[in-house]
Length: 282
Image (cartoon, rainbow, N blue to C red):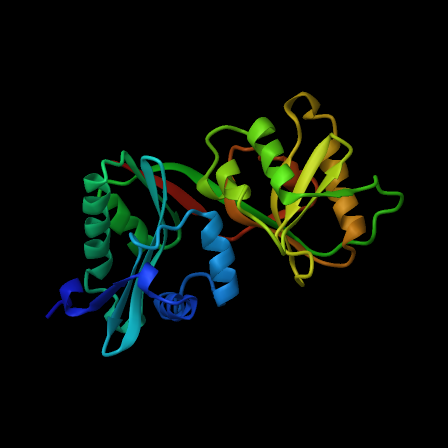
């Protein structure tokens, strides 16, 4: 007999500890298309910046252990499914559909207008689920990566800046309508261990954690009047010199039509998988 959400014990994330949520995420994304690792600290840092609503988010338990989670972020009249999954032993029983239908109903009760999510395009069952519920694909999101290179000689000098100042530059100079993870509202809530840098007043970069073995470039901004003049390239070279001998990665959250030749032109390769940004009008 198919399992029903009512057969599980549901708790709002507001009633859970960070350890509880991490345990649920770990079970929910076991065997996922991309290996994911969660810690309470990383969970708190990430989802705080995404505007997670702990009262609209849920953890489901069965026989005293976590088996599912749905994290919902909210801004104004827009909600976003920031993460949803169920443990292997309860998958394939329609729980994801039930959870989304409940989320849609609650969003409508709040008089919200839009529900967003991102999904790996290669995750065919999930794409089929969302499409069946009326979600429309807005665009494809891609990522880039590059192995370590030799130190660049005579780099332009980098100046470290407050990550909040980086977010202000992104709000002023960034592209409109970016995905949730690249919007200035998200960037403005990013703090330690992230660090931000500028190259004069000509280019700006944000790194997730400079102490990491593999560096993640969270965002890069060049003021509009200075684009296509080499400042983005010079910034990347300066970052290479500041953090020599380490590989770089940009997660698949970048619209594929946003400067598509820039990173490949500098020797960065693409991720083997990509995401679809999807939207449901409520």
